[in-house]
Length: 462
Image (tube, rainbow, N blue to C red; front, side, top):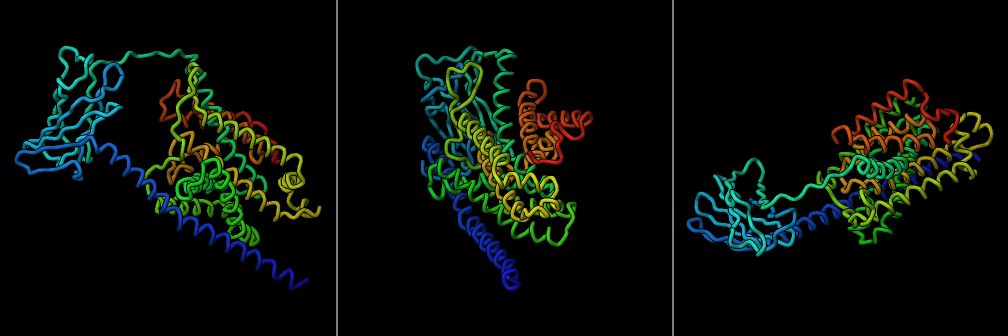
């Protein structure tokens, strides 16, 4: 028995090391490829727009369409909100350099120029306008422009303003409420995971935002580098996120718990882990934004003021199904009941024969899996994957957990729905930049009257 007990920690550390090596191989081997795929996508996009660029010069020498010009003048030509296709736009420099471009199907043009010094004269050639496109009296076909600190400048030509459509307050409220429900469900997945960890260990995990980011990044790798269909890439991301949570507990949190480290010290460690993971992500994928397949989706027609796409409906449906499965697991399964017992009283649970360490390990796995799925849905709700995307919603996750009641998973879900609604609906009255502040103000007001949160059942997770 002594030998068996001695070898168990060794096996645990061996499994933790293997998990760490797997995660490191995943990150070091595939994140650069994802970044490269994003760069290749950007290059392809530039090549597609550069085909409209041609130039001729007088004293400055000659150039060709294939020449890589370091600076650009770009914009669009529209009339009544509709793009004008086939219009010619020229740019003339002070040294006589002349660049010429033709607008594409979206009415956009790109002019490549060799320098940004001096004043450039940008002209919309009136004779190139298609039949039926006429400029109003006094329209300026020629404008002068100077480059600033950037390598490109924008000049748009609008022949006729589009008719402005007004939306009633009720229609705006309905549209934002639907978006708020979608956001709240996505936020709830992450908040439930954070609440699980707090309920069983007492740890306020500030690295939870990076677990959200990790899931989105794995989905990006699986769909771009591994070329998996997105419906396969998302489950892969959830599974890898679960392995990541298991590895963190086995390699970091469990050893710290066994050494009797206090919750405050553990919280400080989680802050350091958050910073480390965040900047590792930045080093590996850069500061740009990448997109998952299908991130830009067209709203479903015929829904009136509600602008929602098929992707949004799938996201909401997925969140609801996962939450229902989690509720069944927590209430009906043996592990779920053991999790609630550990949350009530770890010492009493251990005396009753429950393996507390195993329960906490399961909690970390479930928490990481939910966070990873939340990261994927967050990448679709706010299209784009960035190295700090999880950090941007971490405060809202904490607000949802606190509002619903510390340590209560179902309370975290209710708090998330409230926060999601408030964030989206509040933009009817306050600027969008302040919408997160409104949710936190409501949190403070509610806690003044009910400090334990809405559910406030500290003795149980569920």
